[in-house]
Image (cartoon, rainbow, N blue to C red; front, side, top):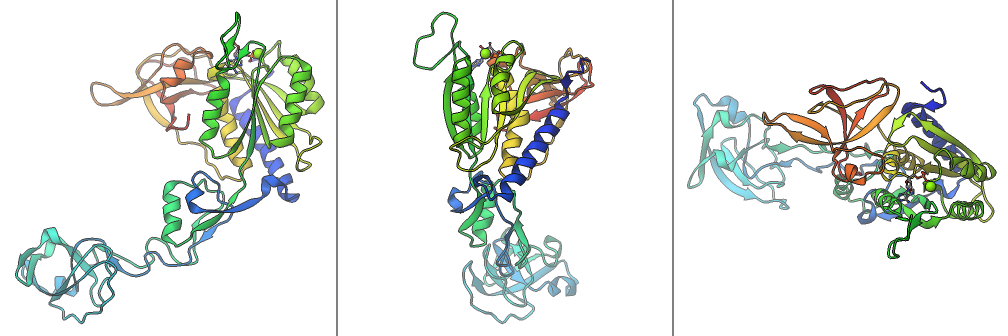
Length: 430
Ligand code: AMP
Ligand code: MG
């Protein structure tokens, strides 16, 4: 293999190293990047939690019923020799009520879901299992075990133990959990500021007619979409033409305002020399040839601090390839996790699914391929995957129709029908 190429794993590792270094620098200088802000939980979706959140209370705060039914003492289940138990209903307790009852062992209370368990009672028989006869119920001893259908105090969360850990990307369930603890505001990381640049003489803005040789700037929109799924501040720098002055001006301006610059186009062989010249003036940028498909060329590094920036810090830089599919694949495989990590998120690599492929796929060892695929059930109801057809790096349809990447790893060769392959589900992320 050409030794100029680096593998996907090596690229990931290099990105991780630089991100970790920039995060440390920012933290040591209390730079804006490292700052937190306190926000109301209704605005917390997709934000990154800055500190551990300790539960201030036990959840639930007291034992309560998990069902609509009848609360009783489970000693009844052990004592009784016959198959049916008969209990007397001596009252009822609804969720939110606090009255006390004195029950004898052969008594029960009608109870609703969420109502406090009466003292002496430890079990609830759901109402669908009982026969009701005036103020008496009867049910089979087999219908319930001691302690069933009761939620114990603190079984969800215990007071003073961490309910959520710093670095968590907050999801609807987390926000519900915070609310269940009575927490209405939380510290989160400041939003990352990300500048977006499209580069190329052939690019045209939407709304203007295409002249000969022009194409519409679609990357700006697919990248905007990808970035909107992460809650960050987007700075749209528009189209920059392929000349040194425009590029230099655009990058300096972007670096003044952004923590990260993402550009697309202008990094492939031929053009790279040109962008390289500017990048070497402005910072330390590597021009990678990654052993992957799509998305071979990529520039990565940090721009030096520039005059006018709010703090004397570097700007992380991703120069993505121009091809519309390559730009999305490289974003998803490298940039997304880097942005989240730089913003303080704790990440794990996504879980890959093993699925049999319904088609043969040609593949050369020595590069990683991210084929765009769909998952489906065959006639036997078994899960299968296949590609979305033509896989050119410029064919946006191949990714728009896909719901997963079929990942063919670095060392893998040709794939035969029914071989197992690794699949990464987009799950709304792409
Ligand atoms: P480049 O990396 O600049 O050599 O571009 C590779 C291919 O991607 C070329 O066919 C470009 O026209 C195309 N391309 C570059 N930038 C964009 C963009 N912003 N939107 C759509 N296509 C682009
Ligand atoms: Mg170009």
